[in-house]
Length: 304
Image (cartoon, rainbow, N blue to C red; front, side, top):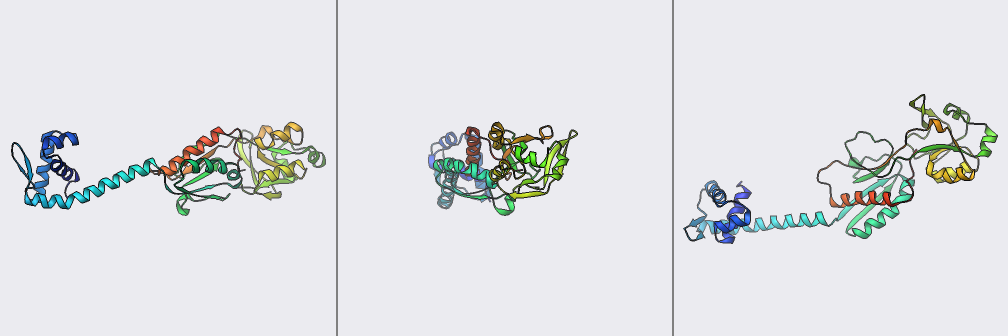
């Protein structure tokens, strides 16, 4: 197959009617352009152009070759223009997954912003607490909370680190006794978030090291909001995001427990497959996520 650059040089010489004009359009020296055309003629084994000191004309073979290659190069130019248009105007389909309660809190605002700006993108969102395999299940992006495994995915941080805390109502503690160390959780009625990766294992920092403490849930549900209501009602001990408990702690409806054993804060991130040619639709979604999380006066709900 001939060098596309040489073919383009030939077409431009014919279009401009001179080597000088074609060299100016292509940003080449006249000698470099002439060399490219000569190489094409050598590869084809035929003279395409008849050159004189004053003019350049197509030979019969050159005219036939020009008729054949011009439509192909015009189609290539149109394809390139189409790619540039798509790059500047997101379109197509985008599949996103996020944890259930986080999605309920955040995605309405995210999708309304995105949909208003990019109406040609079809959006499909799946809210699930299951760890979705993006590549295997055909998702473009996932929102995840907490430490990320080294999966080769691209990552964009969406929120500042958020803290989980342990809480119980004064009435519960009066009935069941104090809770001063994580190991004492075995004697308490625990309220667990089923959307957590390990709902029966709560992480703490004990003696300076991260340690998981097993709990036996009295109630398990994938909603921190419901767990908060149960904790305020004195049903048990809950571990949930600090932001959800602050008002109840302020009013005295809940007590903040085991503060000195709190695990490291967790960050919310957007993850997507590593690919140098990220689609405009996906790139725009990441930007809207970052913008929305930054603008909100609240912090996202964290998975346990």
